[in-house]
Amino acid sequence: MTARRIVVISAGLSTPSSSRQLADRLLADSAGLLRERGVEVDAKVFELRDLAHDITNHLLMGFAPPKLEEALDAVASADGLIVVTPIFTTSYAGLFKSFIDVIDPQALTDLPVLIGATGGTPRHSLAIDYAIRPLFTYLHAIPVTTGVFAATGDWGGGGDGVRSLPDRIFRGATEFADLVERTDRSDMLSDPFALDRPMGHLLGGLAGE
Amino acid sequence: MQFGIFTVSDITQDPTTGRTPSEAERIQATLTIAKHAEEVGLDVFALGEHHNPPFWSSSPTTTLAYIAGQTSTLQLSTATTLITTNDPVKLAEDYAMLQHVSGGRADLMLGRGNTGPVYPWFGKDIRQGLPIAIESYELLHRLWREDVVDWEGKFRTPLQGFTATPRPLDGVPPFVWHGSIRTPEVAEQAAFYGDGFFANHIFWPATHTQRMIALYRQRFEHHGHGTAAQAIVGLGGQAFMRKNSQDAVNEFRPYFDNAPVYGHGPSMEEFTQQTPLTVGSPQQVIDRTLAYRDYVGDYQRQLWLMDHAGLPLKTVLEQLDLLGEEVVPVLRREFAKDRPADVPDAPTHASLVRAKYGDAAPRQATPNANRGDNLTLGSPYQDGPGAPVAASTGSAFGRAATRTAGAR
Image (cartoon, rainbow over the protein chains, first blue to last red):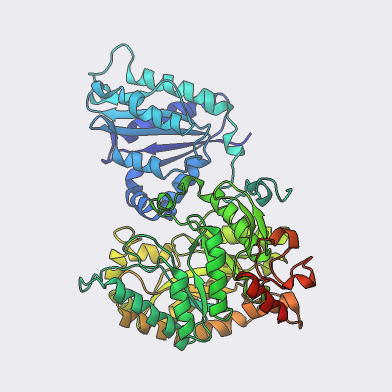
């Protein structure tokens, strides 16, 4: 069996960023679970901060500069996607949405997704379910039911004392690893330049092809 | 190999002076540019089509017909003709007319058009762009090849016994290129009909162009029009030149930074690296263009975008001088080297007539009088299949005219 490809997208803007920190922990638990089950993991991490100009240029020009293209190709050919965005003004960061907007609408079909988000207070935690999850269901990806929200307090002593952040990360990672283990998505890639409909089909069967 | 220029007909403020030319001024400037293209030895002038300001070229055949009258060798083409929002019946008529008045110097490049609001203005839906393009071209193709067409489709009124007039010059339809940036179905469409494929090339990385051309070539061979290497390929390009490359960079930068399409986006350095845009010396343009062959193979037509983004007429004419005097002669020589003998040139009217008739005289369509009997007699033309010889009498103008015609 070939290695499972996991792509991690972090939309945190500061350095260091708590979104990146959460992303790394989600990846560490997911990869750990998969390796325990004998599944090789090939992980790539992209910080959208590094791609911000390229994303804007893509929005304006319609094509991806090389660095962004590498990220888009990685996402399209992944077996699993971990995304983490800060919550700004009740929703995902604008840069995160801009990145989603330059992904080919077919590129995420059947892709297992683990959603994480960060914010100042736990009162933003439902943003995962009302804002981020619909993006991925619209794109026919498969977001796992547990989304992991990390508020500022979760990183210190002020977090949820019953379901701690590490517990929630582990639960999300388990659901995600279950799907990634089973998918054969990266073996079934389609070429965006491939011709799915030859002329006979385009003409309604006239050419008998 | 053919070399030429294409224009999108934008009317853009000159960012260095703040001045915007009027429609009248830009239209006259474009006529001057087209004539100058012939003067400096270029082969092709291709004109875009737009139906919204700040563009002026809503009626390409009118403009091209005038240019045809002012030139003698220039091949007139389009970049592109909208196969989605134009009625294919009117396209068949307009471009056959242009063929006649230009003495066979017309071809056209079809495109779908990517300006969303244009579609509803012409009663069409952009989401149906590709199906419309497929259906409309199938009809256009037939209208130029069959004297009488019965047709029914989804996107226009059915036709019963319709004849597009005038018939194509010498019975040979204008050559058609299909333009696309990244739609594999358009490459397939071009290959299916044995038509040319023109890769826009200028807004996208070379790897995309390479893959589209490869698909077109492979399908051209599949559909039995020749080998993949014999497929008819055109490429866009974009350049700004001065003798010293740094002068070109300095002079073009404000135009680049404010250009309608890519202005306020990537830097000029990024864009020149990622797309074919070349800003520098004529030698740099030569080197860049020669390298296209490495990833698309030997090809037939190279067009450059030279007159956009508010560049003043004087500058554009200087660019054409550099293109005609320094760049194209070298490219002609270099592209001819190692070019396999069985790779054809871009089809012209003369080559298409020769291919169809050999040494025989080409068809000169001569109508019968029209009595609405296209179907019963087989053809409204005297040489049509099944047309009785005696049926060449009759007239659209009543019995007296019938007698005159009969006496002829």
